[in-house]
Image (cartoon, rainbow, N blue to C red; front, side, top):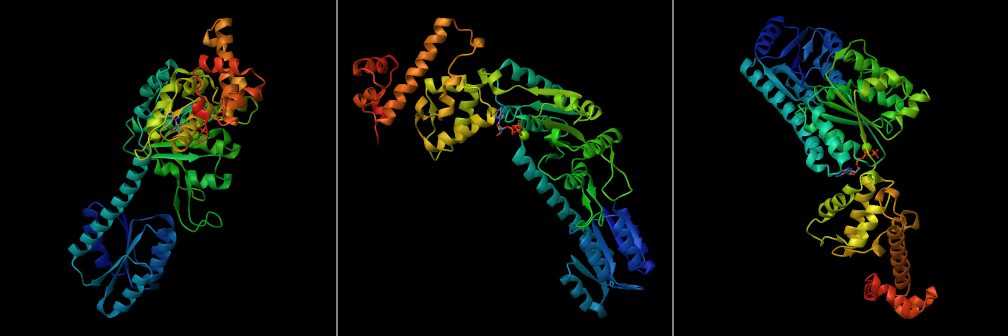
Length: 461
Ligand SMILES: Nc1ncnc2c1ncn2[C@@H]1O[C@H](COP(=O)(O)OP(=O)(O)OP(=O)(O)O)[C@@H](O)[C@H]1O
Ligand SMILES: [Mg+2]
């Protein structure tokens, strides 16, 4: 954080003393003798504190105050005034000055004030940071998975956490890319600094540039204050560029330059700022195709993909489904409502389903069931139609079943579904259910027994 102080004071004896004392205390001090000089300084630098006299040769300290307020609300202004001008001091307070000091004052009094202000600033910054950390704190223990593909992924994460190399995480939507990005940051040696996420597709292109790199006051209409970019916030930490595949061509080249130079420039500024930022990028688009089509720059791709991580879709790690489902069940049972349980058949359907929305879809389903079916053992009939849909019923060849086994499994699922639906339709009445299907009542009951289907489960409350 900036420990810079600007003193605007025409009495050079006083400014000399203040400057010496504050410099000795470890602050970076600049002195201006006039309003004009003070304002010029503020247009270039953003100090933490401005200390200004009220009466200056070319105007009033109020102008310095007003200028500081428009540049950044984070600058604290203290006005210094002689007894005779206490009214101006009060006016200054009304206009947003942090405090005023009556001249002559003890230098100790001033240093005490200054120390307090910087302490408060540090607390505010720390507070914001801690909030972000608590919200997003995450380690491997939050990432559920025991499949060999996930174990492989954990070992890559472990190896890269303490490096500065760029990481590119690719995978379908909902596979856990953001979770992985956070884990890499919070288990690595940058975890004490900020993890700064930004979604490149959610922000219009012209705003994205100033979000990333910051801007100076007046850089464009609407830029009423100097603003730090996310690169600066992420200094010594991690910048998470989500949906990187949606970055425009112009920003791709600006990002590439920033990564190559390790320096950025705020929009509208000539000055370069050195930054030490670790980049983790993610996308659910197929970057290989974007590269071929010339939509994504190859040189940027290689910069970002120093460590490429592919997160497999959930259907390719079926061993994790049960574990994840149980994890989410306990996540959503908050003690106020009884937890649900997935019955054996329902769980089998979950394992067979191809999960186009991946882990997010499973998480959302568990949330919905936890609320709507609190305390219940979830049966296939409780699951949404598309999960039980015929397309997903046929076991894949990878399941390694013989023709006969596969056929039996399909038949079982078919019977469970059609019998369950008919019973549900008919409020659990077996005669009417069998009739609606045009099946003999005896055969219908035999099938119910074979699959352990209870008509009571389908009776209206
Ligand atoms: N292995 C996992 N263990 C526990 N929770 C997970 C796991 N993978 C994903 N999740 C949860 O699933 C949800 C989706 O994950 P995340 O937001 O990281 O996906 P994503 O890959 O970034 O998706 P998108 O491409 O749509 O942005 C989150 O709530 C996340 O906490
Ligand atoms: Mg995401």
